[in-house]
Length: 218
Picture (cartoon, rainbow, N blue to C red):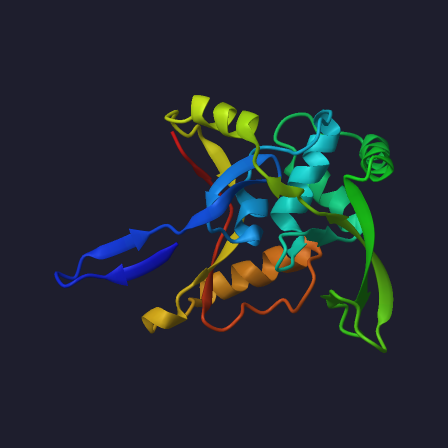
């Protein structure tokens, strides 16, 4: 998507069509997209999962470190803890979560990658030389060219409103607007980043603000 101001100072948004529609993580995509945003925001899954497995994948996709391909990564203990804390109804037992992770690994929906942690207990991915290695659970959305059935099903579901849903905490770029994040946003990012056990420094990146988790939709 491109953004520009026209002659009358109206904001114009333009989407760039893909040469071929694709299916990213179970969702048909027809326009240029950011894989990281897709991973965070997707409601669909590209595999059949039970309820506990779904909770595990949601926690990993919403809180995990995202690389440029849209892969989400998180240490196992952080994933288990966040799955329990973020369950909105009945919280699953740790034993059930561990079992769900093992099933997802056995089916190839999750894989292991290698990260590292430094002396300040900051997690990094990819692993950095000289730091303590840390295994990370990884969810990688499938990506393929959409076939006729995918497009037909997508067209059949078009036009429906978006139901209320939870939006994970996320960064928003504001530097190009000449703005800086508030002290509250910086503190919130640091707190949420530490609690979730995410990779990278706990300081809010320069040029961004932080939007905490909230409800969106009707």
